[in-house]
Image 1 (cartoon, rainbow, N blue to C red):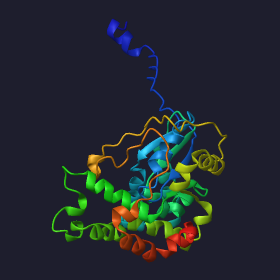
Image 2: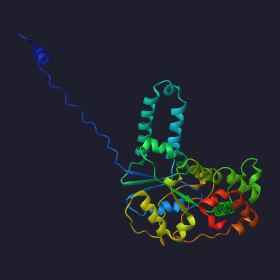
Image 3: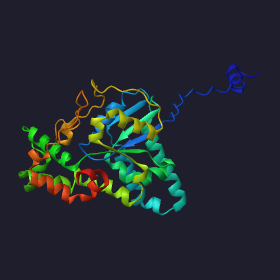
Image 4: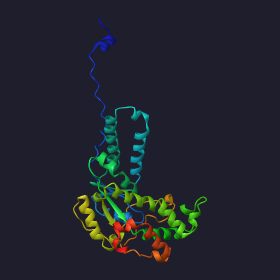
Length: 300
């Protein structure tokens, strides 16, 4: 006769119920729009105006483009990817990059708008990864106005050392040197070359260029163009009492108030002759004739 212990050991055991694991919420399908153009050209104003629409999720200056760039760099340089079937690796990279973008963009609003000047040079990558030509809104501005705005920020930054004056950089010791430095590298020169290159690559026709001068003169007309371009139904906006929705610590960039939005949309002063000097202003226009031929023919 089996003992009590033997009875327990020979009895049929019931299978344990599987532990319930909380399912990761599926990513919501969102329309992804990109904004990227020139500095000091109204991109922060544009984002905060668009952010008044409850359907739109907006960003401050976004690092998503850097994530995509570094992902591409790792995919390009790692020997493990190079050693395997190219087509299969390309397929997997598209899936991975698409997951990074759509995962980053996940949120409650059906439209996500990401701002970075780097998007222009990634047009073809976005098209390849997302499977369709990306919608990129490109804010631009008269280059003399950009330089004048940069110089005024420099003069207002009296307590901290400006990036143009760090180290042994002699260019930051004069307004001419600062303008030449800005226009030869970041932030102005690099952004201008990205804009110019979209015409060389024949993708400019798929972008929407918004002149800041037009945005502040007639914001509703420009916003209606954006709505039509991204395929959204128009809704009214507030231009006289703007709440700044984006938050950035501009000390990180070394320039206070770099991304500050004023509460009212007003025309900007075209004060470059008094701020930069007439000779330097004329030089900016002369050295960048291609920009004025494309966007400001009436000012040539």
